[in-house]
Image (cartoon, rainbow, N blue to C red; front, side, top):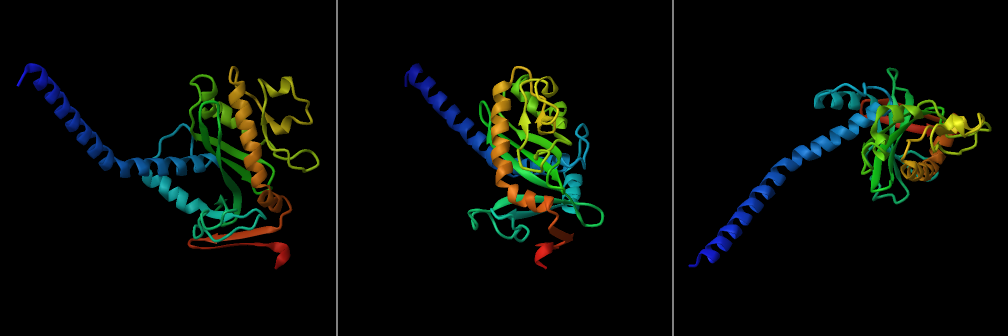
Length: 253
């Protein structure tokens, strides 16, 4: 066999061995990757309602324990009706949307959390937005995955940007839904004071990221507007106790 054929054979064998090793490693590591993704999402939900410190590290057990204690997952339909906790998937109800309820020490709702999945400049932006039980005030906002440019649009993952959302409103002075928008720069420099509650400061050099995120938030929040309206009208009452949970309209009792 010529040296050329030996070289080609060696290269093929090396490729096969490397491919096998990479496949084996990927298969063995997949459960850990899945666990890390699940934990990161739980952490961001807790972060959105301020139950964990943004700058502090937490182990998996702590995140799981806090999540199980404070967060209940439901689905909500286009009329704002909440269905049973974690028993009916979105595939079983085409108009169902995931909704997370955060409870306090008395097992009463303190906030509700909406998953965010929207287009960015270079890819999807994933995160969570928490709203207080008044149905109009933002309690927190987090981003756990994106493809935006580091140092520009990528600033959406940083605390200084996300904290701008806290206390902002998704309704106007007349309590009508208007969503939340990202200004092109400092909001106070260009938005009149009557509309400032509905705007957050933008990121310098990342106008397109802000525009995409603004449109995405408007679409998502409008889809959840029926449940937000029920909270604003104070007609939704929920109680959660371990595995027992229910929600109903107070006026329909």
